[in-house]
Image 1 (spheres, rainbow, N blue to C red):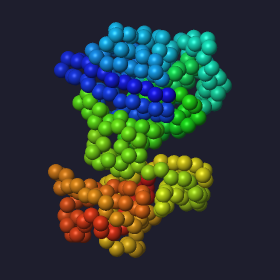
Image 2: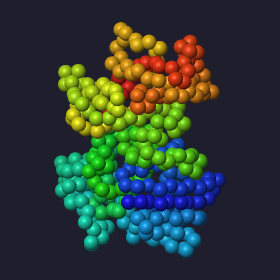
Image 3: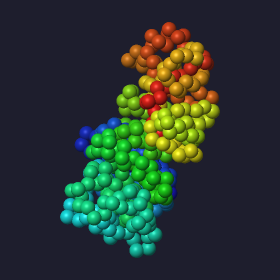
Image 4: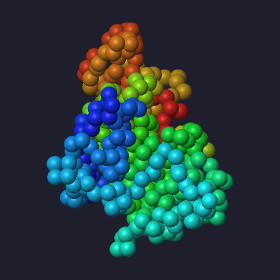
Amino acid sequence: MTLIVAAKQRLGAFSLDAAFTSERGVTALFGRSGSGKTSMIRIIAGLARPDEGRVVLDGEALTETETGLFVPKHRRRFGYVFQEARLFPHLSVRANLFYGRWFAARTARGESFDRIVDLLGIETLLERSPSKLSGGEKQRVAIGRALLSSPRLLLMDEPLAALDEARKAEILPYLERLRDETDIPIVYVSHSIAEVARLANQVVVMRDGTVEATGPAIDILSRPSTSADRREAGALLEGTVESFDARHRLSTVALKSCRLHIPGAALAPGKSVRIRIPSRDVMLATARPEGLSALNILEAKIDGMSSTEDGTVEIRLDCDGDIILSRITTLSCERLDLRPGRVVFAVIKTVALEA
C-alpha cells in the first residue's frame, strides 16, 4: 500500500501546505494541537477538498485539484474512527457492528465478524447497549464497526484523546494487535508521544501546517526536537524479550548489544517490544556506580551534545549501537567534563520504563 498526499488549504488565519508518502503499517501524524493533523486526515478521507493538491492510494487518484477529480467520501472505502465513538445509542453492540457491513463492497474480502470480535476482545459486550459501556469499550466497538466495512485504509483521529489513562492503557494492546494481525494500513493522528511510540511504524511530524520531518518511528522519535514538550523527549528502542522473572515481575529485553530490565506485566519470551526511555530519566556517571537501586546501567560513548536555553544539555549516547538520550543540567555537564567521544555510564530509572 502506498498513500501519497499533498495539500494546500487556507482556513481563516491558518495555512496548510503539507505533503507525505506512507507505506503499509501505521503512519502517525504527530504534532501539537493546531498543527494541521486533523485537516490532513479530513482531506485524505474526502471530508474536505484542498485548494490545491492530490490524494493517491495505490496508484488510484482520489483527489486531484488540477483535473477537478474528487472521489466522494462514501466511494473511497475508508474506515474512520473519531475521538468519540459515535455509536448508535438505540442499537446493541452487535447491531452497531453489523451496521459497518452495509458499507462493505460486495466483492470485498474483509475480516470475518468473529475474527474482529476476537481481535478487539468484545465478545462479552455484544448484547449490551452503548450506554452500558466504558469509554475504552465504546472505542473498541467503534473500531470494530469501521473494520467490518472492509476498508482499504483506516483513519484514526485522536481515538484515545477523550479517555483517561486507565482506559488508554486498556485499549492500546488491542491497537497493537490490530497493527500486527491485520493487513489494513492505518493513518493515526495523535499529539501523544507515548501512543505514537507504541503504535507507529512511520511518523510524520507536523508543525504550523507543514511537515517538519518524516521517517521511521525509531529514528524520528529519538530526535530531541521531535517532542512538542521537552519533558517528553527521549529515545525509542526495539528489542526482544529474553525472559520474565515472575517473582520480581521483571522482563529482560535484549537490544542490539545490551539488555534492559523492564517492570510490570509478563512479556512472553521471543516477543518483539518497543521501549521508550525518557531523557529526563537517564543520569550519567564517569565511573561505573555502585550501591545504587538502579538495575539498568549501560556503558556508552557520547555521540553528540546540544545546549538548550533552559540551562540543560541534551546528550546523545551510543551504547554500542543502541542510541539513547540524556538531559542533564549545564552545571552537571561542566562538573563531569563531558564531551563528545568520552565514555560514560548511563543510569536509567527502571520504573520509568514500559514495553
